[in-house]
Length: 349
Ligand SMILES: Cc1ncc(COP(=O)(O)O)c(C=O)c1O
View 1: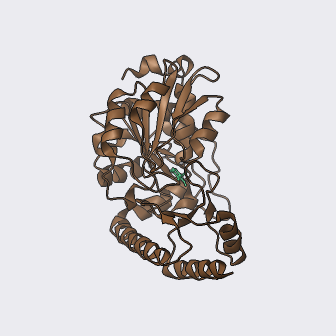
View 2: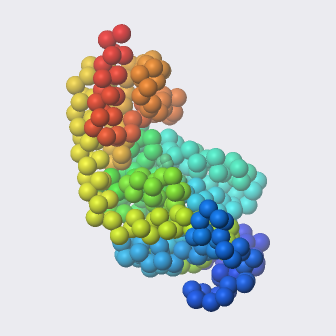
View 3: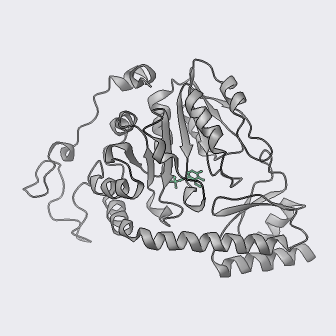
């Protein structure tokens, strides 16, 4: 893929902001270059310096864990930052379009609308699989990005690998594969295929399996050329020092995270088995994620009833192919038991 012909002209020509910390990389010295307060806030002496704009220490550890190179990694303020930057780099407002595959994660559409970019929807099948030929037919010369969410939110299932590969080979723009939930799936990540597909961008996040949603740290993996474009247009210090320090402390605990993932997967099985025993549960969709999409006779009644019991789930019943469905996150055993108890109470009312 020749990004020079694909990227918006003003972005290609952009002279990015050069921060003080871009220019001098050393750690020792008398730092009078960034107009910082030299002594700190009085609350803490720790946070008076700007953080590393390119988060190199974190990327080195992620590169080892994911078996890729640091220049193939972009870090954003949540996955949402990478999504927004893709629109700003590649989509001409009012002119270009992107392809979304409903039902899917809502931020692709919101970001498209914020950036005044046309959305072309190609529905998933009723069992939430891709329709590759329809997707290719929906595009034209102004089509820039295809967003595939796998495992998908809100359905929970992974897309067929051969369909994603077919699209990577035939879609003439950037293919984003959002793997926010990949750690809960038996499917391997597409990160390992980056060298094969220059148009592939894989998104992952620290918000799910890593248990760090509050930090707001999303990862994007792609060719060094594509990552360089995102780095050029991001705000200079998009990841705070506090976030960087916390993630650096968490990354060596990958083994612990893997154990937690296993626990969540076991809890997902328990939740499924217990829900299946309830006569009001009509269908539980297959899940490769940390949630289940569950069909009940009257989703609004169940949703309201659960709220009354202080159990909050997501009502997805107005979403395409999700009629009567609630999306239920896998919680702790106690939370699962509270949900089941509330469910039974509503069912017998
Ligand atoms: C598919 C998908 N991608 C991305 C995100 C958001 O990730 P982040 O917290 O990194 O912005 C979510 C959040 O629910 C999601 O479901």
